[in-house]
Amino acid sequence: MKFYFKNIIILLLITILLFPLVAMNGFAQSDLTVGLVFDIGGKGDKSFNDSASRGLGWAAQDFGIKRIELEPGADADREVNVRNLASIGYNLIIGVGFLFEDSIGPASDDFPNTKFAIVDGIVLGKPNVTSLSFAEHEGSFLVGMIAGLKALQDGKDTVGYVGGMNVPLIQKFEAGYKAGVKYAYPDCKILSAYAGDTPTAFADPVKGKELALSQYDNGAYVIYHASGLTGAGVYEAAKERKRYVIGVDSNQNYLGHIEETGENFGLTSMLKQVDVSVYLTIKSILEGTFEPGIRLFDLATTVVINDVEYNGVGYALDNYNKDLITDEMIQKVEEAKAKIIKGEIEVPHEI
Image 1 (cartoon, helix red, strand yellow):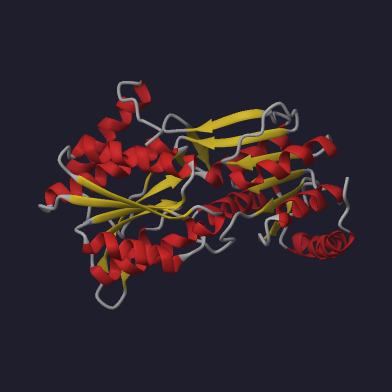
Image 2 (spheres, helix red, strand yellow):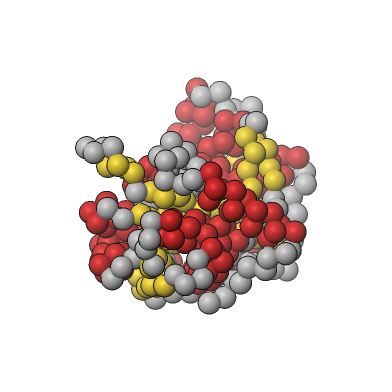
């Protein structure tokens, strides 16, 4: 087992400094320590990573855990960060993203008394690892319906999709989206593009804007992005072309707002409740109900946290898009949602 002494010393100093800060904020009631290591794009992506951080924040507020968040660096830093957190005694370590599969698997063997969670990745056969998985295709189907219904209503015939890294997970978003568009509007054309084949494709707003401008200029009326921080560029393009955009993971509707004119182009967002999964994983350790294996969050998942009900995946409605989506559209989407949950609609997960 490798020990990275410089990084361990830095983490120890951070941990020592955290204790008084935690106590001052009233979070010292629990002995549980949780370390979260972000994916590409890091905190502030307004999407995937921020959702994970939000869940950690909920747990800190409700349970008084001690927490630390680490930003990604080079690929090797994933394993360094995971192992360093385990070495200094963190009880639960959460890797945000499928790229942590190669890090958490071996680390869980070397630190059997540490609990691990991986978001979007699958690590099986480890008694101390839970894999947090989502039915992204189901949520994407619903926002695909909204895209198709919006285009149909406004007399348009084309929508688009911009993915981040071209891998099966992100293709899963595309598959559900396309199925939803066609369910609502069979004759609608769908443009598709990916930002790249490496992890940096999730952190390239310039490429995102380039791809989105191309699709808008080729007739796309709505674009759905599943590209992390790259999606910031898609929003820039949407506001420049005054066309609609659908966000991902967190509620990104506000990103489509033009303050100077009051116009809104954030049609909706596909909500992937990474925040809920992180919160519930932490809660399971406190309650002694932590289980290894795969935990799936889908449309049928219903969770109440602080009097708010969440599904595993879904779509966002708020003041930014309330005038963009009609009651009739919502009714059709909710009818399809019920059919998916009942198994009457089978949403594809491959393109």
